[in-house]
Amino acid sequence: MADRAKPAVPGDDLSSLLGPPLLIKGEDGAVYQEVAARISMAVKPKDFLEEIWVRDVADLTWEILRMRRLKAALLASAMSSPISDLLAPVLGYEGACEVASRWNQGNRQAVKEVNKHLTRMGWTIDTVAAHSFSNRIDTFERIDRMFTNAEARRNAALREIERHRTTLATALRRASDNVVEAEFEELAPDRPTQRDVA
Image (cartoon, rainbow, N blue to C red):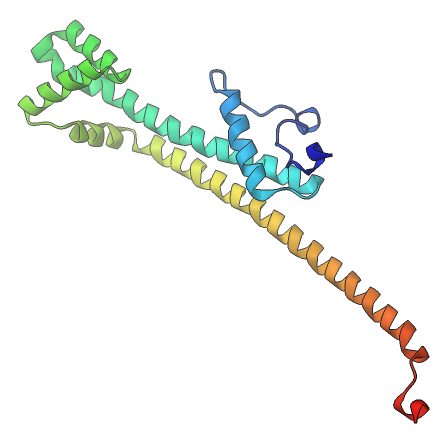
């Protein structure tokens, strides 16, 4: 009985009907399930339609998170080449490529080394990022459009849940009012009036 009261996690029971979540190779399915479970617990789907919409919201939220990661990875990748170009006169071509590669992987020592060399040249990491961003601005704009589109679809699914609940609540209220009115009309003729008592 306790299992029925627990909100459904999109992706568990719905996987057999809607298929598994669309994860890219290397993405963590357990993290997706955690995101989906938290969304489901917040919304608490009341019926199958709401479970489908909650699954949509979970998938679209995951897509939004993926695009944020993609944007950050793209910028880091775009910065690696200018960094190696800037450092080549100081470290040689191979040394610059090796340091830029380690910097791209987040190696702390490489980050310090890159910052030190950039400072000596009058550059900052933000300057490199700005140049790299401007070289790929069309790609970033496309990602932003996809991001905005996914947010709009997610918000539409949430609105559908809200509209569904409002419509259901209105129908239940109307049905309840009809039952109360019918019961009142049925009982009213049997009640003695003031004249009958006098």
